[in-house]
Image 1 (cartoon, one colour):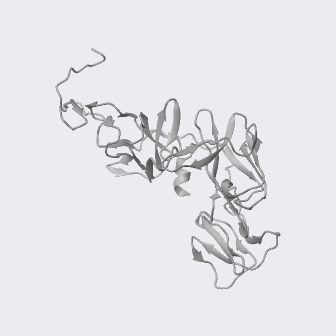
Image 2 (cartoon, rainbow, N blue to C red):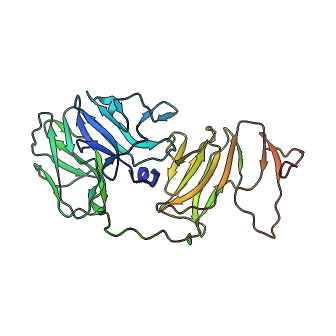
Image 3 (cartoon, rainbow, N blue to C red):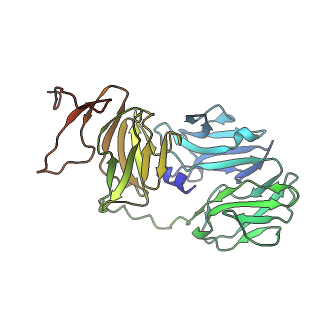
Length: 330
């Protein structure tokens, strides 16, 4: 879940789940709504992740009953266990919310983030709605040696975030869901973002702008003083659509902290940059992954004034070939 949070675009629209739960029984119903400032927001669509064998297709619209920026899911089943989000036509996305469907026992855990300082009670429920003593687990570890009817968290803090589940001795274990915690909104408007002083730069390894398709993987990372910097995400614009690394398909790229590994089996040609949670941006680099037979070896990173640089034309065999070189089409 931590990774997924890094993937979200910084918008104020979020996915509202009603009832406010992450776990549901088979054949129950729920509503998913795109909300901003407590109201349904127009122009946003509820999206569902759909997995395949080698590729995945985010944004499947053939699920539930759609009504503008909301979706109603009835007669829930295994097919509805997935993660959902809101997205507009420009590719801006809300946070992901993972919904799990179970048959025997569920953990009554809120889908919406819990505010710091509030109190929270988790319960293990059976299909008939009754609550019976259960063992509660946090990040896979047993919270207490004896079963309890409810698990209370007073004065919730960020440290209480984690994966929770419960086990009923007779009816089995519930799915595991992630509890999100947020600070309450500030009464005063936030100060404007400071100027870009972090000197965070986009690093491309190998240091090239052009790569052959089906070649070695390409690493794109956010660096400061030669080291990856936390809290920054690799983003790109392809065909006028902006996405964060990992948002297209986990089978074709891997997101590790502030680094993104591109599988060149996918033609991920586009403009790449680093962006912080507050919207600060690094310089951009255009990366081209081609299915052709020739590339120009030209550095992706800026070249320092006063230095020497050599450009070469290479074929798929790695050979340097004689070629005509053009600058600004001349």
